[in-house]
Amino acid sequence: MITILGVGHVFDIAKQVRHIILQSDSKAVCIELDPVRYHALRNPDKEKAKTGLTYDMMASFQSKIAEDYGGEAGDEMIAAVDTATEMGIAFCLIDVDARSLFDRILKEMTFGEKAKLFFSSFAALFVRKKTIEEELSSYEDNTELYMATMGKQFPTMKRILVDERNEIMSKNIIKAADMYGDVAVVIGDGHVDGILKILGDRETKVFRLKDIRNMEFPESDVKLEQDNLTLKYSFEQKIE
Image (cartoon, rainbow, N blue to C red; front, top):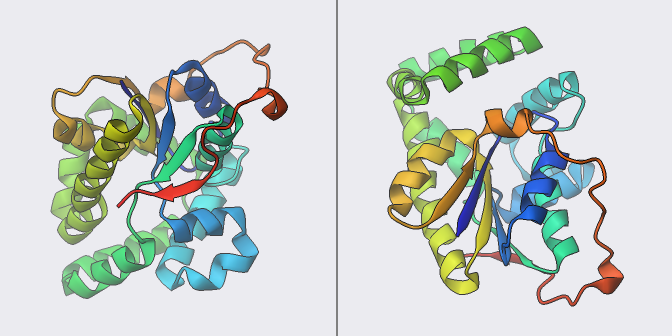
């Protein structure tokens, strides 16, 4: 079984992510991170200079929005790693190096795309929670149309940031599933449909972002005590 969690990096959903993983029978957790981004999340001040200007701009935007939702950008990813460690199972970093992605996007974008990106980035500085909710509602109403519209406006970004990563992360998910059996997968919700298509007829259970944000679970969930665990794995693994 591949349990897929479609998350959003700016929402306060760390508790829900932890709950779903704990309730699954997973033997490993696959996470939409690469080593650079993982260490940047763990050590934001120390690692900032190593990620690059474009990544830092996006990270700053996400952090700003995350504050409106009462959390910090990437908390759900760290929660997934910590839950895997708590359970004594492996966590696998399945994404590609973010620095190379953004370098490629800027190199391969047309002038028109760069101009639209510049104005979109400027407008994003003033975006508010209400706007985010409206965009999210539009995405949830028709995900396929939303992604297709993104592809028309920013074809290079869609190809590199979404489509190519879907292929790579799907291969790494399959490798992890073949290696460990049941796995949980924590990825941005925009990747869910594409990855499901690539996974084909493999058995999956899917939690979409909308479901996760609205999830209610018992407050009596008890934290696992590491002293009582037999740790099969407790390491950072990059599937290649």
